Image (cartoon, rainbow, N blue to C red):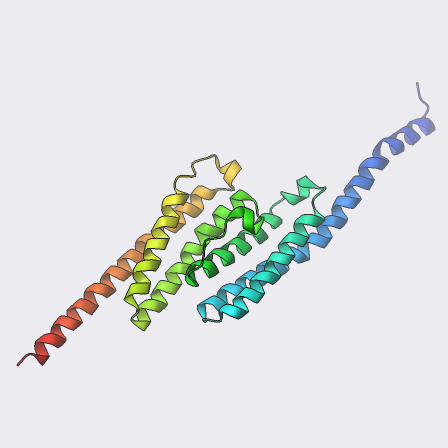
Length: 215
């Protein structure tokens, strides 16, 4: 049987490697956290720039978000437990949302998870949240009287929801995507109602105007 002193030495030897691993993971986490916060901030500002019509500025902000997300993932490459703790997912989700929003409003090809280099669940959540940004764009288009833009945007929202609803896997695998999909459905239904009402009002106003102009 080991005496107390030798047991203490054995315990210290056993846990020293664990302590070193935890310290390395902690330091990587501390490097990645501010990068993820920066990625989220740049993504949010990118979306604001898109809605203001500042596409070139939006692209610059999106590039900054992309760089921060990539650097954070690289910092945690050897620490999968920390990588999947949640904050990297959130940063990738916001980056994906900004990427999808910019692409659709600027009439560009939809980026894939591979081209964005983000995890699948983060991409899906980004798409679901982009539905809300398209609603905002559609309402702005209604105020401008750009009905054709509204029809196109509503069709995009419908396509996005139709895709999301087919991803039927356990919440533990998708990060509770079902809840985000339900929220996207509510946004889509409200937007369709707002658009239909606006079109009906516009049609009625045109008919009244034509009657008043008739001899």
